[in-house]
Image (cartoon, rainbow, N blue to C red; front, side):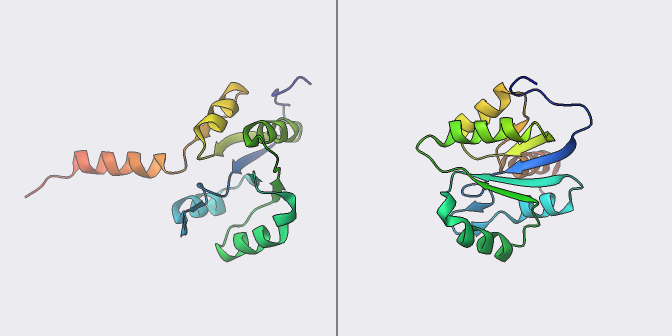
Length: 138
């Protein structure tokens, strides 16, 4: 199978980053955590954190209440390349439906291999814009 190609019948999955995505500064992106926890798809966490941070990362994901299936800490000097390499490996086992990622360069790289990549705050921002347009002021 070529790089980025999806195999028929693969399990559906959602990919998420941590820093700037699940955690925005000191705040938890509760909307995204809720969406992920309510999904029937596998939740795969792919982060640029270093592998030696696994214990702290697992603890933090537990603290924020994320129910995830797999955790990958890819580290390295080029986070985008490391994440895309991991995603290409995961595409051998999963049909990745969407990836939540705050880094625009990484999102573009995901899109280049056929992954629907979303900014973690874009859905909320869009909803707020729609609400503002449909709400009348008295």
